[in-house]
Image (cartoon, rainbow, N blue to C red):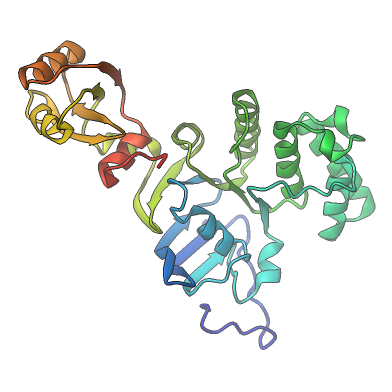
Length: 334
């Protein structure tokens, strides 16, 4: 059933797919969200996510990532298209869909009137768990998420990393089939970010399906089985991080900082032996090379031969940001 026929209260909800079945746990078809002012935040999105995947939506701010998660988690009503989560149409049967999902939003939504342990215990009770099961689950998750020594603490006493770990723990109290995380490490220090990555990997090893949004290319690269690169509400590319990086046909990316007409410099560097292409952005020229040894001196020589002076130079392997730049012509962080 699509969103044109909500059917609320008119028919029995569908039976969700059993966890053992191999059907995709998330499916979207031509999913669209248009906000007032004809702002098309998500534009005909087609996704299929398999059980046990860590699936990432990668893109700059405003790409449509958060709106997509909002539609999949029943918080935002689509303008058109269909979204099925765990075999349930999230618009036609939002209450049923919520039983099978856990959500960690960008903002801290912990209950400040409750202790750390109580945030977990009462979440379990809210989802219909008995008192004994909810207590056991809260105790187990505090150990798993390295928060047992903070069980009786007030939420406001937690660091940003601890609070984020508690939000993830709370989201899985009721053993959801799919865990959604919206920019889970935004604003965290590097140590807290790495600690949360370890938690997510542990959940993944346990078979948890995870969908996360991020604008950190390293996060998507290191965590995700597959990544959809989004911009302006559309999916520009979708594959494993390894295959996406291979798609740009380069094994080395050299960044050249210079002055003058950088587009002209890019055109000249794209013609040097071993170059597959070159582009500009963020005040530098990037030249993509394959099978070239001694890349830096070769690029310096080609730059100077073109009449430009090299102010700065760096070399790296292709990244997901390289893929994004190749697709859009601009940096991922814009």
